[in-house]
Structure formats: structure tokens, C-alpha cells
Amino acid sequence: MDESRLIFNFDRYPYLTKTPGIGGSIRHEPEDFLVVEVPAYLPSGEGEHLYVFIEKKKLTTREVFEHISQNMRIPEKLIGVAGLKDKHALTRQWISFPARYEDRLPQLEELEGVRILETELHRNKLGVGHLRGNRFEIIVRDVAPNALELSMSVIERLTHLGVPNYYGPQRFGLHGRNPLRGYELVTRGKGRGRPWLKKFLIGSLQSLLFNDWLALRLERGLYDRVVKGDIAKKHATRGEFIVEDPELENPRAAALEISATGPLHGRKYFEARDEARQIEDEILAAYGLERGQFKARKGARRPIRFPLQEAGVEEVAGGIKIKFFLPKGAYATSLLREVMKKNPEDSTLGEEDLRAEV
Image (tube, rainbow, N blue to C red; front, side, top):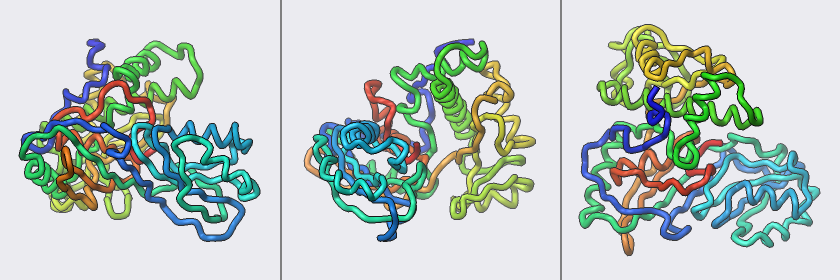
């Protein structure tokens, strides 16, 4: 087994669009990367939990979480967040804790980089995944002279075809080596380490296999098509179904109403059949793996693409600004790499990232 294949490298995956990239770089300043959480619901105005909408800069969500727990003395199990937000950005998100601690709220702004924007009551604690997605405003600097024209061309194409739903670099750890560690766990036995860490590392391997599956489908012209045995997802309702008649379903795939889904192998998930399963088996065979080796993780399916919404591009001093909305589970890096035609991130970023997923 060639171990280099198990080290994440964003540059090895094909692009969907053929337009030349604008190049450039991101994150010159935190304000260049604005992320605003879009909740699944708004607080009702009554209840036993206080919802706090905060703005944070140069802080991970975990650092805010720990400040609330340790400095405000609120038990960690009582604190709720919908998702993690990146440190290298200006981000806005909801956090909740019991309203009986409201008198301690001023201490939250004692953490440098935090600003309280809004508070409201609600009946339940904010839960992981209780969000619709995130809105982004990202400035790319040091770009090509015709960056606006190129960006608009790519955005138009992605709006029509959807954005390749690759997992971004932040999923794979420093220098992209987490899939290699996950591979060692599933092929050589239990190993040492905490159970949560083992699951995390195996999850990184799941993600690498998914990216390979997406790349293979794209290379074979099956990005915006379904084949017999695919598990397809309806974008409007998020429902899934097995494709029995590709000829019947492919007009819906061409219209971005449905998309094929790829496997995150585990102990229980909706398994593909026929031609679709054979494509998945090719990826597993390339690594000498079998489905049964992933029983330590719950399985799932992930769409090959996601619809691009609320997208726009404008020129700003020193570069261009790209605005868009991502559903939870999607990575901003997947869109940016299509525009820039390069890996937007470097290897120095931590685990909390720009996805709308936890």
C-alpha cells in the first residue's frame, strides 16, 4: 500500500470548472473572512434557556466554550452550540446556557475578541446541528488582473451544476496525516488512544475515501448523473431513495433536483447496489479495504455536490469579495478552490474549520 495516498492532498483532486483560476490568498485579516451562522430556528422569546448571539475574532468556538465553563462557572454539559466556527475569521454564532446564569453574561465579553450582539430566551438548549448553514463573505487578495470576470464565470457554472462536495483540508489534521492514522486503526486492530480520538481518525479515513469516490465519478462524467443502484438525495427535502431507472431520474439530476450520494462506510448506512456499488468497491479495493472494517463508526451518505445559493462577486480594494450561503456539512474551501484553482488553505490551520458542520 502506497502510504502517500493516505495523506490528504487537495491538489490531486480534479476541478469541475475549466475556467482559469484567479490565484490569490485568503485570511490576510480576520475581517477578510466573515462567517455568519444561519440557525435552524430563532429563539421564541420565552423559556428556561438564554440564547446569546456572539461575534468572535481570533478565537475557536471551543475557546469561548471553555471560557463560559471555567470563568463564568457554568457546567459544560449545560452549554449549547449548533456548530464549530473557525479561529482565523470573524464569525457570528449562537450559544446557549440556562437563563438562571444571565447575571454572569457580562463576563462573556471579558474574553478578548468576543462581542455580544443579541440575547433571547428559548425553551430548549441549543443542540449540535441545530443550524441551516452559514453565510460567508470572503475577500481574496493578490488576485489575477481579470479576477472579477473569471470569478463570475466560475460562480455561474457552479450555480448551474452545484459545487463538488469535497471534504476540505481542515478535516484531515496537520499535514493531512490523519487518514493514515485511521487506516492503521482499521487494518491493524484497536491500537492505543482514547475512543473519541480513534473514531475521529477513522472518520478522517472515511472522508478521504469519499473524496476519492467523488473524484472518480467526476473523471467518468458521472458528477451530475446517477447510475443504477445509486442512493440519490433530493435537495429540496433531503430524502434519499435508490435509483432503479437511471434514464428516468437523470433529467432530475441534470436539473440539480437530485444528486448521487457517496458512502461514509460504517456499521449501518444506506448501501448502494449494482453499478453504483461497483464504483464504491473500486475505491475500497485501491486501499485493500472492506466495508466490515469500519464498524467502529456509524455510517452515512454524503451528496456528491451541493446547490450554490445567494452567490455574488464584487471588486474591493486589493482583491475581490465572494459572498455565498452553504448548507450545513459543506466546506467553503470546496467553492474557493474552484475559483482560485489552488488549495485555498495552508497546513497551519487547526481542526475547527469553515464548514457548516460539527
